[in-house]
View 1 (cartoon, rainbow, N blue to C red):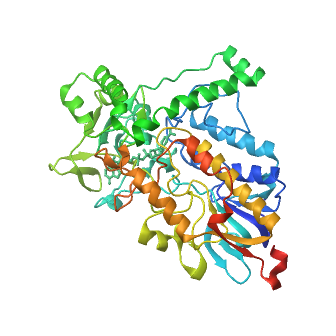
View 2: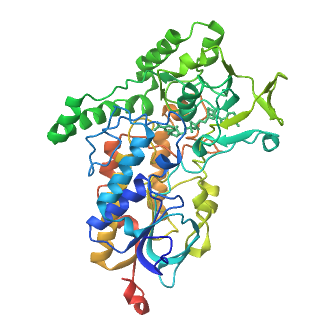
Length: 501
Ligand code: N01
C-alpha cells in the first residue's frame, strides 16, 4: 500500500515486521486463503535485518542454499555464502512475486498494542494510525534493536560514531583513524573490509571469538544451471548442507568434547594467519568453542596482523572528544568510532509495547521470569499473540529460516483450528508453558552455552539462556507440527461479538 493510503481500521491478522519471518507469514497466510492481513514494517521496505545491516562485508555465515524459504528456492545465489545485497534482493523478489505487497505498510511502527477482553481483539496503535485485529503476529526478530555500549563520555565524542547495523555510508573512512568496538560476527566482517582504506584501525576486543575457515566460493555456471534445471539436485544439495549443520548439535547441547575437532581447526586457522606470539595470545579464546557464536572468516586474522591495525584488549574506561581511553591509561586518538556491539536480544523493545490480559506488558512479565513462551510462539496472558523467532528459538549452527517456517506452520494450524472450531481466542495454559520451559531449561544446563565458561548475548542478565533452542531443528519442527489445542484455553466468540468468530 502507498504512504497516502490510510491503514484499514480492522484486519483479521496484523503482522509486525517484513523480514524473513513477517514476509514468510504473509505469503503463507495468503496461500491459506487468509487474505485479510496487514504487515506493518518500521523500515522503508522488506528485508528486516538483511535490509538494515549494510556494513562493508555484510554476508551470511549460513550457506545460501539453506538460507532461503523452502517454498521459494533461489537457484541464482552467486556464492556458497551470500552477501547481504543478494539476500535483500532475494527477499524483495520473493515479496514482489507473492502478490502480497499491497498489504504491506512501510515506515509504520507499532507503538502500542492492547488485548481487549470484551471484543477479543488486539487494539494496535502505529505511527500511521490505529488498527484492530483478531491476531497479532510478531516477526520483529531478535536482531533488530542495536545495543549501544554504555561507555562514559561516548556522547561527547566529536567525530562520527555509529552502530554496525546503522552504517553511515556518507562517512568516508579513507585515510581516517578508526576504532571498532566489539569482535563479534559483524565486526569480523567489517574489520578486513575497512582496514586497507583507513590510516589506522584500533579493534577493541573484550572476549576473543573462535574463528573457523570460511569455505566460500563462487558457484560455477554449470552448478547454477543445474540448480535451475534440476530442482532435485538443488534439493539434495540443500538437504546435505542441512544435515551437515545438524552434526553440530550433539557438541552444543550434549557434550562439548565432541567439538574438539572444530576447536583444533579454529586454533590452527589462527596460528596459520598470525605469527606474532603476543597477538596470538590475545586472540586465543579462554572458553569452550560454541559457547559464543562460532565465527567464520579467512580475512579477519590477516587483517589483525596488518601493520595499520592494533587489537586492543585493555578494557575501555571512557571516550573523550577525540579518543578512546583504556584502563592502562592509554589514550588512542580517532576520527570515527564504529560500535559493533550487537543487539538487544534478551530484552526486546517490542515487548514493552505489547499489553495482554489485564493490561500487563510483555516486558513486565518477562522482567520477572525472563523471556519465556510456549513453544517459543505463544505466551500465557497474551491471547492470539504469535511470535516468530520468539523465546528460545534461536540457533547457533543452522538457518533461522527453518525455524521460522516451522513456526509459521504452527500458526497456520492454530488459525485453521480456530476457524473450524469457532474459537475467537487461544492462549496457552500457564502449566503447559511452565512445563515446556522447565524441560527446556533443564536441557540447557548441560549445553556449551551454559557450561562453556563464557558470557554471551544468548544469556539474559540473570545468566539464563532465553534465546537458543537446545535440541535439533528436526525436533523443533516435530514439536510444532500440529497446533496442540489441548494445551490452550480456548475462548468461543462472545455472543454479542459473534462477527469476530
Ligand atoms: O554482535 P555480538 P554482532 N565494550 O553480540 C562486544 C548475527 N549476525 O552484531 O563478547 C566492549 O555477537 C562483545 O564483547 P563480548 C549473529 O547471530 C549474523 O557481531 O560480549 N565490547 C562482542 O565482541 C550474531 O551472533 C551474521 O565480551 C563490547 C561484540 O561487541 C549476531 O548477529 C552477521 C561492549 C558484539 O558481538 C550479533 O552479532 C552478523 C562494550 N560495552 C551478525 N558491548 C551472519 O553472517 C559489547 N561488546 C548471518
